[in-house]
Image 1 (cartoon, rainbow, N blue to C red):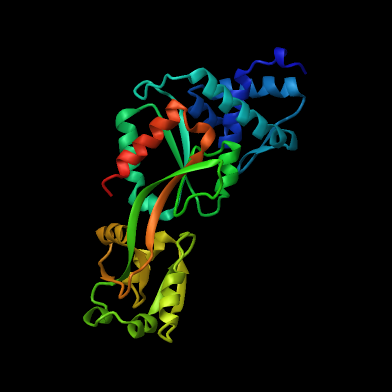
Image 2 (cartoon, one colour; image 1 turned 90 degrees about the vertical axis):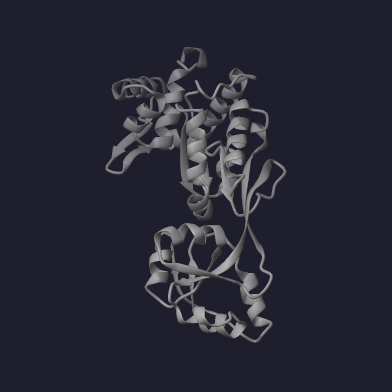
Length: 299
């Protein structure tokens, strides 16, 4: 078919359904009615002579043709957004969505502050936050599926820019009343405690193992759990976890835990914001980055 015969608004609907895998959620994201989204999809199906999406119990499943169209359409819409937005962006009136991947640390320590700051300035802007643990961040940023990523390290490529948001130090975390709290934290004591490891944290604790090995000691990992379970597991066991201090402070709001400084100069923990350089000068994107930097400045 010829492009001049295609209503470009249909591509916005296609992109929203591709993102949401639901006509209802796509309608909400576009501020349209669900029948309007369904009607637009039917028009696009007729124009492209493909079903595009098939309803399943788990959502709208894209056909191979839809999968092939998704990336070119998303890139084209991103470039069009850049072109028409120009130098204008009024957060108080803006009605758009940003998608951000965050690691577990930032999800606990920073997300509440980021959402509050964005909401105060831009009540109609929607922030969609995704867990970064299983995502290929570089690929998602390249595809335009993410606006930003907040992780423990910068992405290593010239096509990405980055800015450090938070710096923290690691501490040993144990339940209140743990017998080890009455003793000095030494290599022998640290190695003798069962350790709780956090899955999908993205934090490299090799420095702990290296320090212990230099003293002919080795720690034992007793369990690997997600962040959501860590506090509950610690208070019901004699395990120790090596966590960022600011994260441990958040856990202490909900659980009776205590912190101890590590007996050596440990590596620093960082949260870094990364984005694709093609968004460097986009006013909306610049506002988002500035808002996040300001919101996390006091952490």
